Image (cartoon, rainbow, N blue to C red; front, top):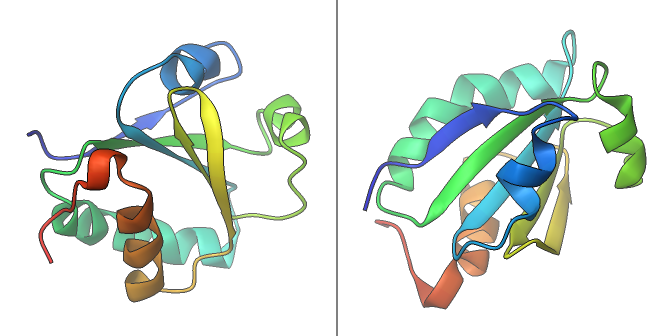
Length: 119
């Protein structure tokens, strides 16, 4: 399986990237410029994706300031917020980035079909 990817989404592309049925975990990262915790996650993201190598997932990044309608659509109160989708259904939500072990644990718990990325 391919290495998980990180894709930028806009209001126009969001539904096709996130809401269309596909048997993979879609992690939506709502972020914003100047957000310290967003910067911490962004710096950790390459290593996190490497840890999740082979996982059936993708990360879709949404600038919450530029695409406020999406943030409002999902009732977000702060950033970063991570929404977890599979087959167009919201599975869970993580507010803030609490570090690598927590993030990886939540992601692994939501991978489809019990798939686990390398430990």
